[in-house]
Image (cartoon, rainbow, N blue to C red; front, side, top):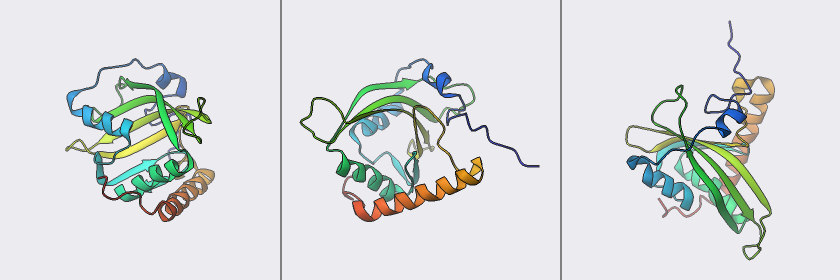
Length: 180
């Protein structure tokens, strides 16, 4: 007997409107370096075999995660974060999970006063015992990012995301490997 995954639930185990309405909480001491690194796009917070998953790609390993962000920086010369809220965890999530509701304003022209695009996302960060990020899931508009668990079309989409991440690795050339 197969169990069907509820395709309307995001990585917080909630519907988008529920995760958007979660209350904001204060940063816990061990989360400070992680939050700073997310805002500054540095990579020392990731475990060696970390996975980054968003609607565009699935990157496995810190070098591939770095490439995804460096590839984006080649498309958009500037990105600002006008909204960044650390959310209270629902009771179904482990304590080593950080939920963030953020808006990122992307600019093709760094001198422009208005962004090319603003994207709202739910970030779900899962940490290991050493407080390194082992899973970084980004869901635009808090909507579940499809995987092979969502059936045939989800499987096709997952394969496309892995291919996209692989191509980004090639073109981004792994980013700046010294920024670890």
